[in-house]
Length: 390
Image (cartoon, rainbow, N blue to C red; front, side, top):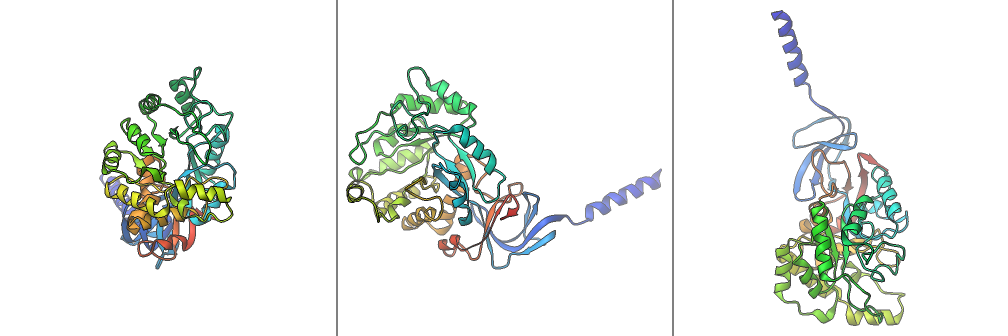
């Protein structure tokens, strides 16, 4: 009996001493994990999951030499309006592997796309808000006339419960009370309604983000503790902005998805009246960069997003205009990388934009370091999703 126990003990010890072999190993690759520079590491992958990140040499059935390469998490565009299946493909080759939809008039379609994109190589993974919260004839009902609104027969609680039942990932609220390009202001939710939406959604365990583009609106809503604002301030007539604005936003704990990169996009081909109105009324890139600089200096979490939609910002290369704006604002390359990756995970509490043991093996292999030059984010060698490359 004693001899049998000794044999079992030796067998167990022998099995414990065997080195772990991973399905795949990236050797000697430089890693940014979404938050910090990890230096040169070895990354072990099993199936669709990162199983090891270590400075120690590890074994794999397949070995990839990562020398001279740089890995970052799949980039996140935290504000889009996907209305065509092709929109979910256009950013993939650019390393944009997650899209956060900020309103759809077709919740069933959004739900189908979310399920389809989770595992589909070649498609950015989609998360969504379903319908945005608004009132009858309020923005964005002009684009989604059949959407459910908050009205006399649909209370705030019923409306929020319906979004949850339809599988949304977060709640989006609209507060838009300014005229735009000569069109009169549309009806909008009032502040007590917005507070009730935020309170009830939080009670149900859902994050709430707010479309608001004025200093007054953001200050009023900040008091209700939304999780984030999905635009920065927009209008020239609000300059200069008092420091108390930034302090109030910071104290609220809200993050901001600026969507300011459109100010760097060419307006060639637009009607002259539109160009004239934009130049006279909306903040230009220099003005936006100065505000973003103040957001950053006041420790307000910034998350990269473009408001991509048909006819405006595209779902691919225009994303990098947003990052260019953050560079104009004086953010370091590390901080810019964080806006595009880990900050999104932190802001939305979703499994996106970060790489760690246990996370999905969804990342971009770059040919040079974005920490040295942020433009290297566009120098892509390979795109990997869930442990697979296209």
